[in-house]
Image (cartoon, rainbow, N blue to C red):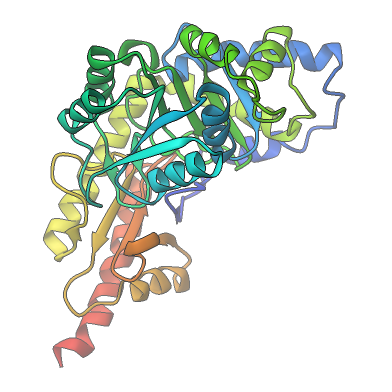
Length: 364
């Protein structure tokens, strides 16, 4: 890959040229034998990404579709939503909007969910499922999913449903080893494919639980996805060009190796952290729970974070502004997907120039 990456949103992320070009292939019928053969081969690549021996399905739609589908398909009444940022709050809104009895266990923005607080909640009430965001994109916080899932298993028979949208492909996500029933992630972040697809798992336990739910809808019925997946197809016409792109990108991901990919993201995070510490940019997320894929910062005193975002745009670079409640006070750097250390070095030099420029008037 020769092109320099200048796109550092926390998603969508930069897409390699050959992955983009894959989407220009001639159209085929999604019920054809040729497409079925393609999908079976693509499906065989996905379990390594999600670290599972089970099936991995693909939905045409954003991650929010599968977040909602998981609640509709697997919960009849009681669900506990663990929240510590904008996207975990979205899951609570989804749960309420579907008519479920949804309780919320909240940690402050910038903090991770405490597994022992989850234990206490499970001792107070029985839940059918627990939802949790692994990597809160809005705050740059990574929740301890392995520890949370362990507590859930010790205290209840609730399903563990995990949004790994901005972690899968960039940080360790161990579906089987951690005992996750549903892992879901859009392909547009650390997986580095254009937006529009979501990959997800469905454990045998979750599938059995879903069979008892009487009204799972059509497009939101995860059992329907599973049945069609086993037949080598989709419940409706899929986003075929995006699947071609995913197939090419999976070859890149598997060639790099999951452990090597995680290690590269670790180096990117450490480089970003070292730079920030020397520039007076303060992490908005707590030490020890910081994301490997997106860093959320408060700029030096007197510097408007939007000035940094705008300055990057003027120089041909893209970073993220603050999100939700933190929109006015933070900026975010997405160091995920195909980003190399040389790409990140160039971005940080650009931000240095901006900080020098915007800080000069304040100094006067």
